[in-house]
Length: 177
Image 1 (cartoon, rainbow, N blue to C red):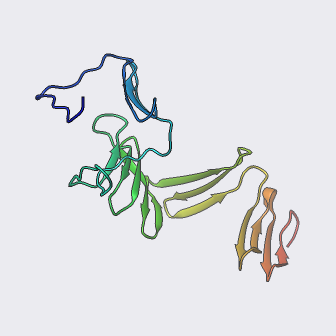
Image 2 (image 1 turned 45 degrees about the vertical axis):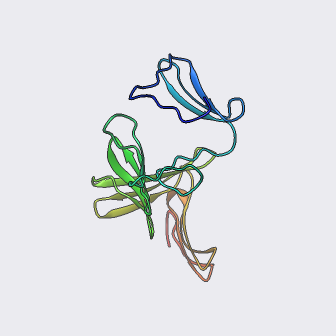
Image 3 (image 1 turned 30 degrees about the horizontal axis):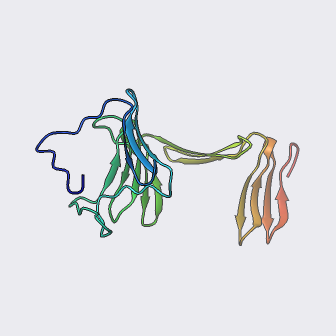
């Protein structure tokens, strides 16, 4: 074309399975298959920006990025000069803050599941006024202080151990203390 493309107030329409390609060969491709929209980047990182000062970046007054799974439904929000928010069924359940992160289910129970590569699940749960830590089946809950010194150990099937300076001082079992 050799210059700016003026659409004269018309849209550019490509039939299904026809792509717009950028870069050498197919570095970046945008297409619609007939049932799925695809942005495919095969070279380097893909940056989605709303503001910036780099080459040919158009400045926009808003500085948030939102991904919506359905029209009018929040999915992921990246807040300019702020945090990241994750939504479940249009309700915010996770956000990053200047102090770390916040989980909020807006109900009496909030659960964080930690799954290891062996599919063992550790659960942290807040329910009403209680806080529960659940170890995987057969696992222990261990509280450590001063690096990796055991302080309290709740062993599977009932034993509880208390430590002083990483030395066991108190233990329960089926019949006694």
